[in-house]
Amino acid sequence: MIVWVVVVLIVLFLGYSVGLPAASVTVARFSAPPNRHARVRRRFVVGGFFVSFFGVLMMVFGAWAAGENTRYPIFEWYGNMLVTLMGGGLLLFGLGPFASWLLEIVGQYAERMPLPVRLAARDLAGRRPTTAPAITMTMLATAFCVALTIVAVGVTAMSRADYHPQARPGALLVEHFSAEHADAVRTAIQHELPGVPLVRRDIPSYSGGEYRYFDADTDDVDLPYDTVYEGAVIGDETLLRYLTGDRSTPYDESTAVVVTTADVKVDSVTISYDVTGKDNPLTSKTIPATVAGTVDPQMQTIFVPAAVVRDVGYQLEPHELIVDPSLRRVSADERERLDSRLGGIADAYVERGFQASTGWMAVAAVAFLIALGGALAAGGGKATNLRQRRVLRLAGHGAGATFRWFSASRAGLSALCGTVLGAVAGYPIGTLLFWPWTASVTWNAPSRVPSDTPWPVIVAVVVGLPVLAAGLGGLLPWLRTRMPTARPGARRGM
Image (tube, rainbow, N blue to C red; front, side, top):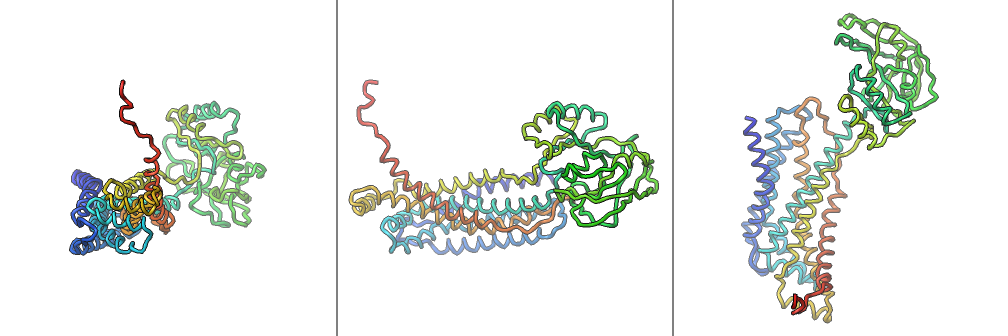
């Protein structure tokens, strides 16, 4: 069964990357009339509309089926993704004839526009077998860019909401090492960061492989559960001052400290422990406590001095070694060197806060360039007839400025047609694909959170692409006139 799933995914990928563009461009080519006076056959437009409508219905069904914030079986997730992706493909395929139809409308409504724009619209509409496929490619690339942006922004919002820091911002955290490697880890840190004080967080020793339970609680304050340390932390005064971010925090080795942002008064906390590690009933003990504030709400916890824990019979071992960001900020290069020196016996991590993935931006940029290339291909070429060029020269009183305006208008109009169709298709594809894409297949996956549609980015693409295409369309003819041409016989004698 897994093999068939992989085969289906490969076929789907090839269909989207090769088959869908080829099919859409082919439909745009065959639905295009040979000249601007002929109209697009309405059966192509009506048929494309119904195909696109059916594709939207499939996407709506896929999004609805994956709309619950619950765990989905893996094959059900694949099914929802497949239905939604196929629906998106049908939507784009059905829009193939609309490029010619849109050029027809532009040609009709450009009669009252300035001469360069009017002639550019006529030129695009007059050679639709060539311009319609290029504009369709612009549409496909724009739709992909818009859909990818919508999904990426939504996934980023989910990841940001589910992000849990592991330390104070800027702190170096070294963890996941055994008690036998503790000295080697400390030596490696001191070698790469000489003279930097280390903060040590302790846990009860796992002597004999048996877990020694320990925790602390108080009824005087409700600490949040989404902080760095959900339970009590054990250490000395350096750990306490790391938690609070205040080097002057009072420390007493017999007094616990409730680190919180709440304005409360706490006189005692109750520690619960099982020194035997045999799952015996927990022993409880009340110890004095005070309250201390913190510069970072994520560091709220109950601090218990190591001396108190040893007094009840525990042996302690280091669990984390920390470089307090109040004393030293560790750079990325220093962390990489330390990680290399550790050689796999521990993990080094610098807390930078949530870092959004930006790899999708490179893919979106490639799609943007493909869309731009399609617009320039539709708005360029040597298909402009000599009569139009003569009219442009006369309108420009013998100068080339009017022809450059004509070239800019031609590239801008072709880009506008493609981006409008692409945005119309990309918005529902991205919005509906987000639901099966983010459906949970594991118990630990984050729940969906509200995500705003990136309208500024979409508007920037729809507006910026035609403007950029128009600018390049007008610049290229000017560059050609400035390029030196080889005279006959210049290479004679070589």
